[in-house]
Length: 337
Ligand code: SF4
Ligand code: SF4
Image 1 (tube, protein in one colour):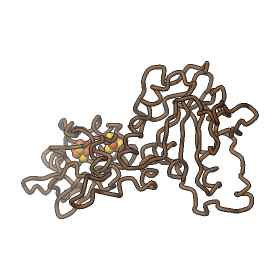
Image 2 (cartoon, rainbow, N blue to C red):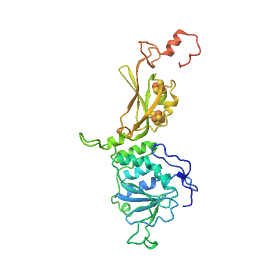
Image 3 (cartoon, rainbow, N blue to C red):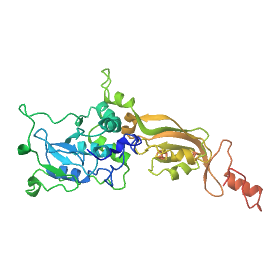
Image 4 (cartoon, protein in one colour):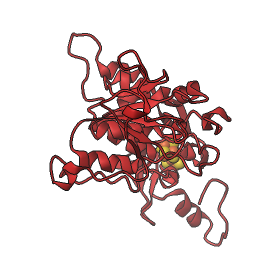
């Protein structure tokens, strides 16, 4: 390989999934490796496939063991996003990412270490990183005469089975449009059954216990002194925060499955009471139940209808109370709208 490896530049281990997103384009290639066409091809194939993914600049992807479908990536192997690899597993493939000939295989391993740990903890096999040279066949290397066909990830062919209408999936393909990388990763892990098998009662710790020890991207949010103003909900780009009102109590909730850890909510909380206390483990991320961030006693303002926190039975929100005290005032004191 002659092109600089993207992971050989400044380290960027954490993408939006917290498990190694795209590491950036390789020199001379203008985008991270795209696997959408490979996913669609897998669904059309309708049968188990062992995919071998080779870097766009691999010198000889045709050499290697039989029984695999070799695909040349559109960019460096180190630029493949973790969620895209897991989506291939969820589509029924075994995936070998080929690192022999790579300038910095240890950086690619580091880039994918997080997702590898989650898959291992969840008991999901099928993702392999292979940096040894292609194995010999009968004591000699496979030569050009027996070279394997190499498919192009950007132009995957139509299979004969698909053209004959055999085997291909009839389910509508999951549409990732509008989903974040983190949401796609969580959906693919669910499709693989990750996080569903807990520890057997009285038995050894199962995948849930192993996943609980692995921190995910979502911080554990806490807000002591929350005023239920709702700014964090509006600031969250993924819709991971919500508010529930019941019986005079307002609860701010965080969905760890949707939260990608951007911390915009923490930065924008007007009273600076929102903070991150560690991170949710992957078991909680995959469980899908929202976690309480703050619970506030609230009431509805008798004048404007706004929900506001109260501890002593006030009937007016701070703004309406101020207006009542200052009917001709044109500005509000600091901290009030
Ligand atoms: S860190 Fe906060 S703003 Fe960012 S995704 Fe999570 S809940 Fe939303
Ligand atoms: S955590 Fe901060 S921004 Fe969110 S509702 Fe409470 S006070 Fe408002």
